[in-house]
Amino acid sequence: MIDKRKFYINGEWINPVIENDFEVINPSNEQSYAVISLGSKNDVDLAVHSAKQSFSTWSQVDKKEKIILLEKLLKIYNERWDEITKTMSDEMGAPLDWSSSAQTSSGADHIDDFIYRFKNFDFERKFQKNSNNYIIYEPIGVCGLITPWNWPINQITLKVIPALATGCTMILKPSEIAPLSGILFADIVNEAGFPPGVFNLVNGTGEGVGTNLSSHSDIDMISFTGSTRAGKLISKNAADTIKRVCLELGGKGGNIVFADSHPEAVRQGVRNIMSNSGQSCDAPTRMLVEKSIYKRATEEAVDEANKIKVDIASKNGDHIGPVISQTQYDKIIDLINSGIKDGASLVAGGTDKPIGLEKGYFVKPTIFTDVTNNMRIAKEEIFGPVLSIIPFEHEDEAVSIVNDTLYGLGNYVQTQDKEKAKRVARKIRSGGVYINGNSADPGTPFGGYRQSGNGREGGDWGLDEYLEIKTICGWE
Image 1 (cartoon, rainbow, N blue to C red):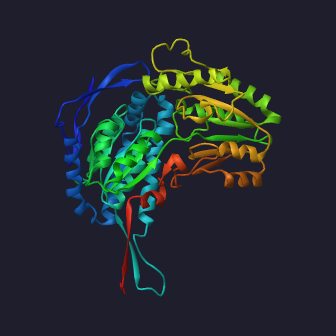
Image 2 (cartoon, rainbow, N blue to C red; image 1 turned 120 degrees about the vertical axis):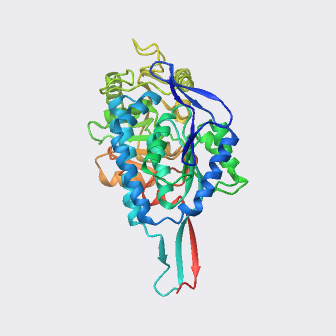
Image 3 (cartoon, one colour; image 1 turned 60 degrees about the vertical axis):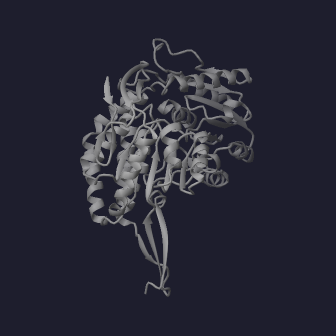
């Protein structure tokens, strides 16, 4: 059993104030393999005090010194690549090859891009040519950073690196069910030599440590990635102290496949949703198919889903792993059953576990056809390898269906007509639109509309989230 009970506070690994052990489960075999501590209000208070004390000095550290530390952090990160990869594979079920090529690499990309953006970010600017007003961008202060289990290092780097660069101090609370990559990242920060108190880590639940962070009077900002339900609670908890709240929440992405789309568009769409076992907030979980190609498209989707292998995370190769937990597994199975009950046609996968994988939280790649947008499987975020295929007649109907959701994170368009693609992309209400399988480059802003959250992560926009803007009149 791996023992990771200590918290990282003020540059040291210390014991929790109150013992409260929590076992971490490997989702591939349902076995406990590590133990952490769940923090209390006392632990949060210690970490916040440490961050507050260090803010006055860290916020004034020269940009060049910060760059040296950030570049050292990236170097150590790359040296520990395989360790990071295996850690995420064990804790959240990402197959080793996918964990390396998608999960670990995303963290490296974000660190590298933020260093580039930080080097070129102008923190002091004259307002305009004939004005004596001066604009200064200053760190917002002490930040509470709450990260999820589905893309652990990706979200940690999207929050921690811009907070460090802008001069903020912070307390990180990784997901308690996938905490070891966060603990490893804290070790990397420590090895890089950041001053004590700048970065702190306290493990715990959302109801415990998360609530204590979001309501704490000495925290100036909360950045949270997770469910819309939890995001609402965090916003309410933060309201009394009027702290800034940056939320990256759920999604119910639509993938519009027009009749003139690329021949591989449907198969690529299926692969997209099934990757990471469907546990991505911007996954295209609703595939809208033009009626003239609906029969062919559904046949291709079923064929592709049946080709996708499911296996344990510790194996290399092209397959998907388990979902994260028993709770998540039960939710997915419940929603699959609801699709059947509501009259959708189950044409691939289902509620039975894959043969030979009775132990572990494994879900078959599942596809429903004849879905309408008012069914639960089309409205709720399933967060598993489940795709709903919905027919449409014309462009305006497709846009209407895609936008008929509480969410607005990522949507997709498949057509070889460039003007139609641009026209539809403009009409879709979401923070990101992906045309013909193209993905976002590092440094582009990521975030959502409506109940998919507020604020943006990545690039200059990611730095902006951690900055206050000061106007000084009479500078010259």
